[in-house]
Length: 259
Image (cartoon, rainbow, N blue to C red; front, side):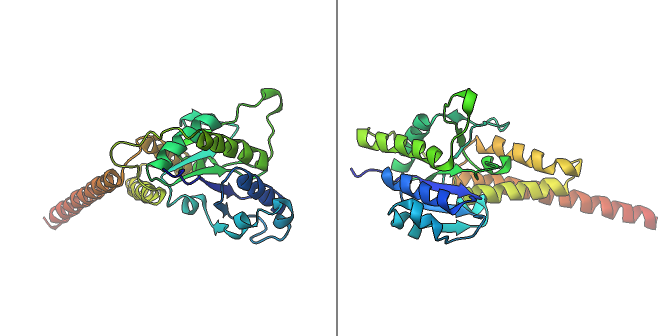
């Protein structure tokens, strides 16, 4: 059996071309090849990246650029956000070694998998972490919690490579795979639209934190594509039912006023 294809690496709002090149270099070192950029500060391509890539040209030449994290993970089923701070999302937190095992098994089951890394300064937005299926935290010394971007990618890529070389039999998923990022995002936005129409997000300034909590909560359920479609059907039925109730109330008030 051939080795599972390695995970996609996604860099969110990367600031320096040299860091993108350095990431490409370590990816090539450990057999990873697909790199995606989300809104790079200086655009793409950037000539300076080729110098620090040290010959890993095929990684740079294959880069795809996206406007948002949601778009970059839309075709993936299992994505882990790498951050030194687990934040308040209540998602599963794994080491790079533990994460590599999950990604390996999911990839062997035919799922799209990836690792999301934040920008050099600000890291990842909590709203983007909420689109992921878990968090990867590197167990570094708390006295100096500082890794550069390429180092963080290298540690995760090393764990993947080590696992592949050990060639363990994959634990294939049983049953239906989880829905893609695009299907889940569509479900989240559908739910949020109807909840907003019903006045759920009150006060309005809490919309972001409340929607984020809903996404994390629902994301933990790991819906299949069919379950996501069914849930959207439930949302539609509830919204139509609310519409019929409002229509009856309006008709009743009209009748009363005519009397």
